[in-house]
Length: 380
Image (cartoon, rainbow, N blue to C red; front, top):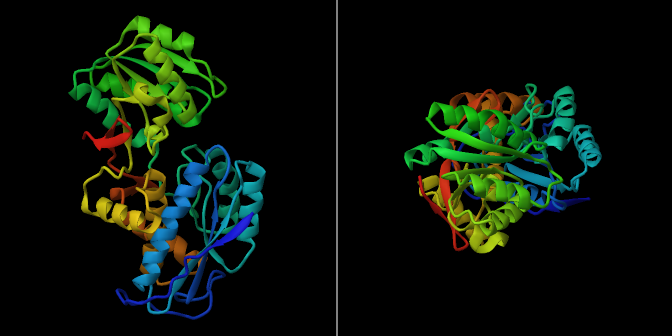
């Protein structure tokens, strides 16, 4: 399903100068076209719709700002079409293939689901369509010159959580992780043990769960019996709600550390069992930097609610794209690819703070958030 996002606002202010070639230039023309078309291919329905809808909402806000500021030149506008793979890999492949074959499409905002992203990455590299993914933390996504990721891999900033444990003298921990979810498998088996060892933290009980695990009674009792100072929980959003409730019922009242998956209110259904939970994120509306607060204010003015990390990722992804077009002076696919690479070399400051890159892959400092009584607060 495809529907147009109404975000082609007319440019009203000139804040940057750029050459405009008129028409569209996705196929390789010189200069910046008057109209630049982007295709978003991310889930709007299904199990991870929260990530796709967030990325698209953030991108829409960024496009509105880019157009209103005439960031790319007087009269230059970006528009974005939306498609919904609805959690299906085949549909994502079909939608991306269609977009790649459309010479009017200059770039793609790619899938948030890792399996979808890994499936379409070879296509966009082969067809030379610059594609920015958000989320999609799996291997096999940022694999060529035309693939970019605007979400820092969780393992790149999870050291923030481990340092928080060390700083609070929580040096005896248990770990439970979803071993079939690639990001959590890497964190649970490799990253957390290594980060713990570096900081003098002992990992006692370590338990693997599967994506199909829905009842954590046994695992909760095992961890409660071990009574560690803290529990590192690397589970999906629905699993974490169940696990937290069962862990508290098993009698454990110590510290639990999660991941960004629990942000955006995804843990709210656990009620009081989630109070005190801490987790590292790349963005939270609780962040107090000027750029984070400016984004939060603009988002709330447009949508009537606070943004979450998925919104921030889409927002920074689209501003990365706009900066890339400005840097290369071209809205062709090749020009955008070159511009995105150029911006990545220097980094920029966005909603998520001071953004740097390893190749085409985003990196952010990350901050620690605490969930209490249905609210996020900044703890470091």
